[in-house]
Length: 101
Length: 488
Image (cartoon, rainbow over all chains, first blue to last red; front, top):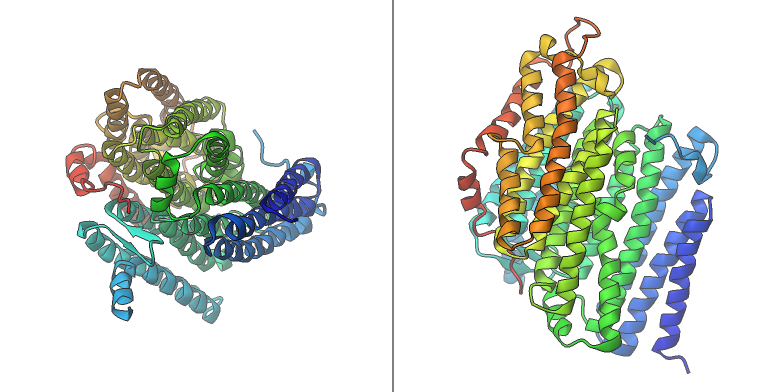
């Protein structure tokens, strides 16, 4: 049986995986993927809660908006990364050290 | 149905005007490319429409508060006041971008387009009445801000600033969403007014989930106002971004985030429950840490942009204190602080921008001997620094005084002491800059090209409120007198 608990567990795993990717990986594109994982974790939560607990459509609407905003954010994020790559010729996060005290 | 919708739209005219402005600016930008004259027309058009949006905003100020679009958006005096401040701040930054050399000539009208876009997001955020509008407001604000901070696109620093902003922003937005999703699951709705009912009858596991979710939720707002654990991006982005963008960032997104924080705190934590007590505790700690970190780190900075970034972190810490008391007097104190802070920040960035255009650096050295070259500008800058530090007779003093009076009234003596010590620290680094202006050795006798008569006139015009709001502050408090938060 698939219940609410299984969905929440999967979304928790996705969320933690996203955080780990953001902390552990040094490649900026991989970090953007981590952000997507976190966003998808919350979208899954919304749909699961909407189906099993609250019985209204708020969660469905919210997850649709999350998908749209995630796409916009990824587009802008990738554009900035491309610009960074054209200037620095690397997408390694440790190279982004010009702005410091 | 249609009639009701049209009635709603009459409250929403300022936002609609901004949307139309942004769309038409996009088309106008595509139509005229290289000629300089037409770009002047674009500027005039943008500033004129933004000035026109002030008329319906001031009309909304005197109307009774309403909830429109199926409980999605609140139009009350508080949100309208925040919108007025944000529109003024946007106008100031767009005007600055016209003369600044920090923005490439072919990107100047694009700055105006994106500034108006961020303004729309800020307006949505200031009047959000459910979690979805709040999230959309924050994201509209953020996504355009990422682009704005990497506007100086041939320079590595600007690309780096945009990248750091986007990565931190994406992370905190995701964490905030995860918090909201659990709040939705436990409380069963995303409407603020319906969520309050659920908060009273929580126990056991649900209580724990809600408390952790609110903590996660705070990450998103805390990042927008750059308070203590989430402030790391702010100095880097401020330094990497062009100066008009920096001055814009320190006004519009911050006040939008602060408005959301005020509304959320006033709606959810206005009753004596264990959640609201822990929220107030959290706000006290965050405010104390934000002020201290901002002001102490500002001391050692040699870049004026970076120093102003840290000082704005300190000011946000001060404004959060108005949230802690959770009453209308505190909200009014925040609004007054916001108005005064907007004018002071604009002047400080105007003068810094013209000086750094001249010397090609934003180091503190560019201020050396300014008083011999441009006495009026130096006096205004010194007065603004005094005002930022909270010295009488300028309006910065009254703003700080209001905050102090509300927290002492509620008997938070400890935090008042922290705030007082921080004001002294702030005075030290502001005075260091003033000292450089007056006693520093001049590099050359050459006048600063940016200080044309028109630009000086604008700076003087911006300076008038800094002086006179300090004297006629009661009038402003009366105007924002009904700026209570409307909950329905």
